[in-house]
Length: 95
Ligand SMILES: [Zn+2]
Image 1 (cartoon, rainbow, N blue to C red):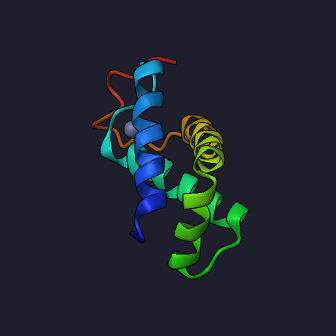
Image 2: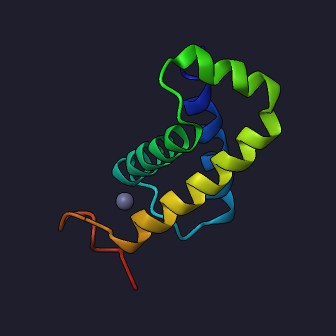
């Protein structure tokens, strides 16, 4: 239950990865996107106890998904803008 928002974000992120073949697939970038998106969502919902997030999510699932989509897109932009690749993973990068 407490991971509801994380699940929504992961779902949205998975969909976005399908439509953004250029986005880096490494675990680090995925983790970064998840972390950034989650913190954005939590900030925009201004919720502290997880139960409260869930209660709201039940009521406005579509709105939450829209917010999650925006948060993930922004997170992907941020991660793309500041790639911190270590030398061993940078070999195939072209940009
Ligand atoms: Zn990466």
